[in-house]
Length: 304
Image (cartoon, rainbow, N blue to C red; front, side, top):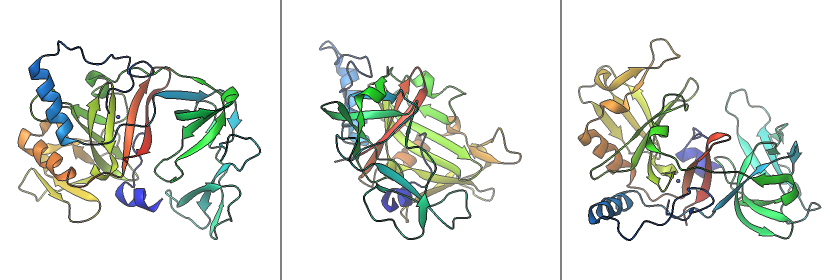
């Protein structure tokens, strides 16, 4: 999936308007007695991070050992397949998704992974007879949707994401949620892996879920010789940033490695990050939700 890969090579763990009132967020539309101050703060946040509303209000989880994802609402129709680069010697290989009735692409071989296995969560886009139409876009797959039998899935509860959950120490990434001011509800998410290094994401907390435009992610690195706290380069498709030791913190599980300490960023540095990433209109958006039975999960959709 070239478009997304060039803009976001690192997968976000595996987010906008108050549309998930009963199925997910558990929140009601804001009461009419909402204060003018709160309304103005919300308006400011919406004017900074603009993304289209996610196209789903319901989620289902696969309850059988494995199930195909079908091109039509018919188990006799083609299934969604995943193919992996044949001669790949890296830990990150090229992958393509296509329907089983499409010609095989030269240089690729079938993956042994099961696309829809027990415990996998899908966002629901609609239903047709005894099938749900579910979203299937991810950081490699450009196919927007597929069908899955209703008999193979069940409903799954979704709870609102709170700032304290995002800022917890055991969710797999570092996070800072802006509590007030011009950037209220802006979410800075810092991921680090031995393979890909450090990635900074900028999203917004909306009615219990986090919306993160994929064009807004940045790749970071420590620079000991740098005088400025943080320097951003957005001259290429992928935004990069360098930070000096004053803004660094050790990576817990890697010796002599450092990552950006989000708590040390000043208001001016946060403004520099946000003002940089909002220059490009997003084509894809990740929505992060909290499922009490499974934790945090993200789903990708087109920002139409």
